[in-house]
Amino acid sequence: MQNEKIHISGIAALGLVISIIAIISISLFIFKAEPHIPIFASIVILITFSLAKRQSWDFIETGLKNGLKEGLTPILLFILIGILIGVWMLSGTIPTFIYYGGQLISAQLFLPSVFIITAVIGISIGSSFTTTATVGVAFIALGTGMGFNPAIVAGAIISGALLGDKMSPLSDTTNIASAVCKVDLFEHIRHMLWTTIPAAIICLVVFSFMSNGANSGSSVGEFADLPAVLKAEGLVSIWALLPAVVMFVVALKRVPAIFVMMVGIITGAVMAFILQPGINVAQLMDVMQNGYIGETGDEAMDSILSKGGIQSMMWSVSLVLLTLSMGGLIQQLRVMERLLEMVQKFISTTGKLILATVVTAIGVNVTVGEQYMSIILTGQAFEKEYEKQGIASKNLARVLEDAGTVINPLIPYGVSGVFMAGVLGVPVLDYLPFALFCLVSPLLSLFYGFTGISIKKRERVEG
Image (cartoon, rainbow, N blue to C red):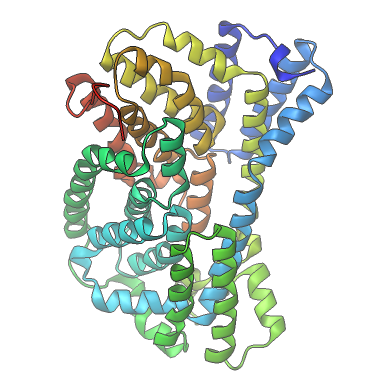
């Protein structure tokens, strides 16, 4: 049976979404469970509902397959990034980042520096995933060595990486938002400055305050000797930065992310053999599979250095598989379509339209757990309403980024959230209060929507 033939009422669609959110929320916040089982329970509910609606198993399988199909590239990226981190630990690339970062960045400026550096790299290469998996991993270790709460450091990393992802002309989400809304790419980026600049200023002020409040200005605690340990272990060399340089240059060429990761892995492996002459192929393969294991003799220090490997990403991969399966079934049942039709009936002013767009984009992220869908579904649903009210499409594109792109890392079972938590080793709910850029952006969109500031009208041809 084809997807077009399924009929689901607005009440049924709302009931399904409320049930899914309730199951996940109760499991995460009350039972403190991992998200896998509540997501699986939600899949069971969706399958049961489909069967109750007399849909065939082929119909159900189609939904599952369509959902999983969207995740093939992210899942492969997860695996490659696990390998990359392990290889870069072995070659000394990440340890060298940590070492020189500790030499150049003071504790008083650490958090704002992390935010700025990750933002610049994110804008340059257009990928929050790559930014987080490379310099982000180094900053987590460096921040721990300085005595900072890893959740706060993760918040600064993710804030900068998402600013870069949002504003880069190389970013897939930026291109998708402009394409869905039929807006020139660079006009879209310029219009986003209205929310991006204030959000960035807020982040810098708060992170500066937190840097001074969280640390007295010097490396503290049991990790104070981290730079010396890295040097003693032979993991520090200026040549170890070569894989990062090569990878970032390749990324600037706008080649596929999978190819970028492979280049990073290959150059990292070559440098590992050159800089660590004692290793052999078997050891390299073990690091790729199981990750780099620190052997300094200090358990706390080893916990910082032991990272990467395919196995380290399996928790994330399994959760993404379940989340995408759930999202595919929700799409197959046309749940979000029905809810969007209901929402559109209550829009009468610009403020309410912006509010509805923000709530919908966040709602799709929470329900489906997929960043692209929050942009595409919301954009398609509200495009005509913006035109009807005489509001320029670039306003819609901006809201899609502010409430779609940057929100997914805050969802514990969202593709971006799963990735960030897995790579940085910090649970989503721990770093969520500190991912300031992600939290502030939708609020700024709402402020502009209700005040009318920066809301451009369709007075002339856009572009």
